[in-house]
Image 1 (tube, one colour):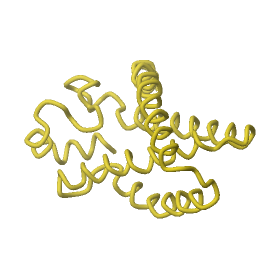
Image 2: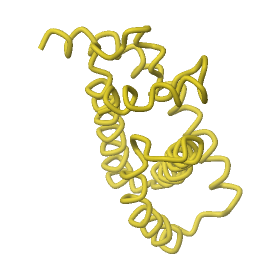
Image 3: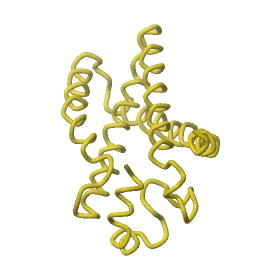
Image 4: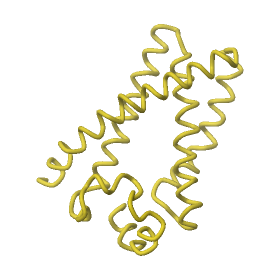
Length: 158
């Protein structure tokens, strides 16, 4: 999907993003169209879903929800801001915006319900959100970028 979107919008993408391409496309090299970018990004998203699932289970088992709550806030803010930023920047459909719109309402509802039930203080929420999301970005994204080289080869061979 991303390869097709890029091909249709290559001129506009090169004008708006002359050096750093959206979705980390520059990491795939200049001829990324034949390198399963969509499959790699889907694998990365699956890894994040598994990570959030494990985090949710551990939160329930240990009855400690602050880390889960902080990750939810970060996911809600970071993911939505990135996808809306790209949508506004390109002034047209970008990969990820439809999913963002579909999941925005349920995520806000879960966030609202969690806020009522969990009753954390604002300072506690801010500190936890910053720590959890910085760690997630550093650790999870570094692991995912290293896995990209493995999955590139895997998806190219299949």
